[in-house]
Image (cartoon, rainbow, N blue to C red; front, side, top):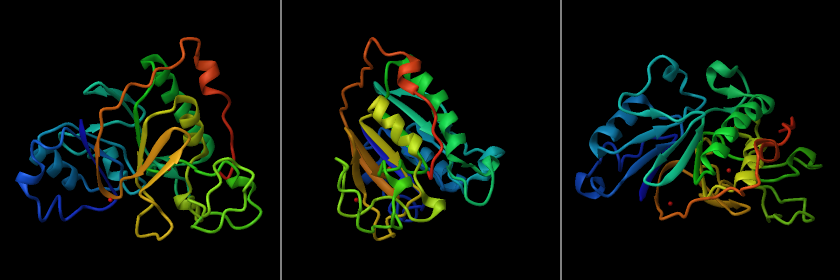
Length: 253
C-alpha cells in the first residue's frame, strides 16, 4: 500500500502544481495529520479518488461544524484499510484554549488515549497511528534540570534512548504528549504519523524512532510505501495490563 501523509501546510506539488500523471493510481490512501483547510482535503480526496482519513489540529476548530466532504474523521477510532489497522487522535497540548479548540491537557489526552487503547486491544493491535501533536520523545523531559527541547544538547545520558540533541519542543504549544509515548510502548505500532512541529524548525527531524516504532513528521507531505506485517498483541494481554494508569506531567522528505 502507498500512503500519502499530509499535515500543516498545503503542498504546491499537490495543489497549485498538481500533476495527475504523477499521483493518480499511485496513491492508495491519504492520511491527514491536522491544520489543513477543508478545501485542500476535499481537493485531494476528489482528484486522487482514494479514501482520506484525517485528525484535527489546533487550528481546525471549524471542523466541528463544517467537516471536509468526502473525508472521514479518524479521531478516537480504529479502521482497517488494505489489511492495515489505522487509529487516529486529534488535538494538541493545551496552551491558550480548551478542548473545543482541540487543545487538551496531558490528563485529558491520557483519558482519550485510554479509550482508544481499549479499541486497539479489541482489534488485536494497531499498525499505524496518526495524530496532530507529536509523541514525547524523552522519558525524562519533565525532570530535565536544564531547559529541555528545541534541539538543545540532551542532559540524560543515563537513558538508553539518549540522543545528542533533544527532539522535543521547548514551547508548551508544541510539546508532545507523554501518553502517546506510553501508548507506543504498550501497543508498538509500526508507524506513528504526526504534524504540528514544522520541519522549518531547525531541530525537528522528518524521521525518528521510539522503541520499535518509526515516528514520521508528515509536515507538508510524506509518501510511505509499506507492506507492514500486522502487529499482534500477546494473547495474555488485557485492557488493564495494556492501558495502565494515567499520569500527569509536563508533560513524535
